[in-house]
Length: 229
Length: 263
Image (tube, rainbow over all chains, first blue to last red):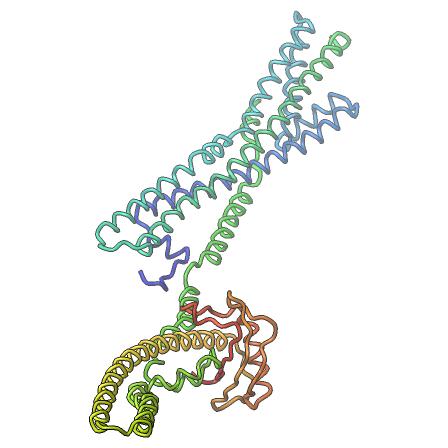
């Protein structure tokens, strides 16, 4: 433990005990996964929002519902959540309307249920893996802390064998151990920020979808009797 | 009919993986280059040692040679008397003779009185009287010389104590001078071409906290104007100068003999 001992980050990690190393590896894995999901979710949410904007514009520009339905059904893979909801509701409505003994109110109810189901599936899709970010944010500081506590325990246990205790004998051990907490915090902070951000964004998108469902039900209701065949 | 909802294209799978990897690479590089906590410390420790070393040496050096005394004279006016004390044992023995003449002068009047008496009273037992007076005179002389010896002894002791105090003082003063010289030397930027062991006498006015008041004055040049300027600049830059270990040594107007190239 001389003065000129190299305390670069690599030597710190290499000198740590096995358990601390495992904790660090786990945390780096968690951190990687959380960043992966942060990027993927942010792409997905951004895409959902821009498709919702685009479809809302098309829908309220007063085009023919049938034409809209056709384009939505043909281009499923590129369709956004709102388009899918529209497609499911309209499909169900036309199907039910074709039946003989079903009045408009029942058909609209059926369309609503179909839209509700699609809506829930879409929101679930958007929200998937957010729980991972949440638990990363809450748990990884504890994992890091565990590694740190373990490392410091080892550093002090080494001290008990020495007659004269100096700071230089524990300092490297503590520095090593603290690296674990640092990695844990590095994983946790972006995860928490991203989780809050994404939860807020998804809430806003799902509110837009829900209000669209209500408005579209009204449109179907209005249109029902006239087009009844 | 609803399978499409499950089989949708996953946006940016690879992109996200690459971005996440890049993120960690950045963090790793940042940690690698920013977390280097060692190396520069030893250098700092060395600097500390150099600046404090002269003060440690200083007290050891001064006792044997009385020459450095001449070199650093914090109190040029007060100290002239001290120089004699170092060889004080000799002086102490030589001094007794000096006081003796004084007692010898005293007895003289008596003999005169004796001479006068015969003039006034030549009568009978002149011899006895003379003998008695002689005896008295001798006794007085003996008493006188005993007192003299006592006085000398005590004065000698005083002188020794004084000399010891003076020596300690001078050591402290020298240590202080060395300390100041070391500090100034650490701040001096030597002009090129300065060689030999030039010596400058600089008058510095000090505040009790050691800071330099005004500009130091050059009393005796080194002969090299560039070096003189460098010394004066270094003194100003060294303010506050170190305080003496013994506060009694402190003087407000310090005449410092400084050897910029010497040790």
